[in-house]
Length: 409
Image (cartoon, rainbow, N blue to C red):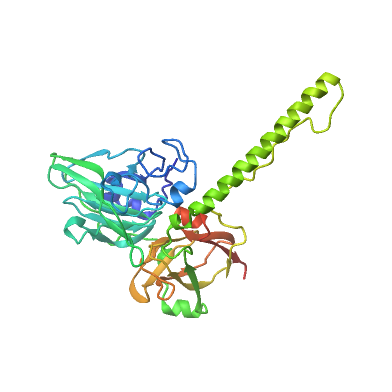
């Protein structure tokens, strides 16, 4: 079950924006067991019952399973529907709200023969549009939405015809591990010929004063405090869960012990039943005439996040600069609650700053040469605890999460 809470602002009151039909796209990819995959983890067909279903196969089993490619992916649904049809009038302007609610996979959104005019990222607006033409003609680059990212775009329908909203292939890991998610067709767009004349809202668009850039001077006047956060998935050399499976000898020993234990309990149960029968005949209680099966502790495929995680303590009103380091091949997705991030650098190199609250860390990191994203943040008006974490569900559940606590001055 997923939903969207739409927070309105001055940009929604611009006449051309208000006249444009609004569509909300919740991109989802439900995980479930299927008889065609190699390991169902003992789960019934069509069910999601074990964390291992996501942890061991985080990209899923779906689109390209029968092609036997290295990386598979769950089929993406829009508002619970697979490949819906959207009808537009030629010349019509609509505004589309994209929300990637997948638990692991990224999207690389593109619309055939059309241009997305993006005006918000993660709900944080910009005064001008960032244009994304048909990604198939632009080196395969569309709007990249990592798990948890949101984007608002305007789209003006072109000539009559049928077009496809797609997610183009996107690389999510490189280096020691390399992984590229396959493309997928997400929706069919049918443009009918009514020659409707609508215009894009003029720029500059109104934005919140909360989004003023955090300048070097403002950062320095607040004390210039910096922090480093390290994202590092620790496992066997190749981060391959199958390499942690017990050997055949270990399995045989474990099975023998299990059989011996079962036999022992069976004998104890039969003795108790015999004593119980004798007790009923004699009418006298006999010690040991009741059988109590041993308590079996539940076992798990993984140890989940302990409660004693690290806490980042921050003073209310602070302005800080954080660098998030990625020590793994995978493009971990960093997300922080409450306050937005003003991204200033990627891998230590300055970029055109922008606001967001979820960002994919560059892939290809190692412990010796981690990749990184640097941002600045105002801790303006919230006291108390919240969290930062990997937006890739299985990583945060396994420990890639920390607490932030904002304390009074």
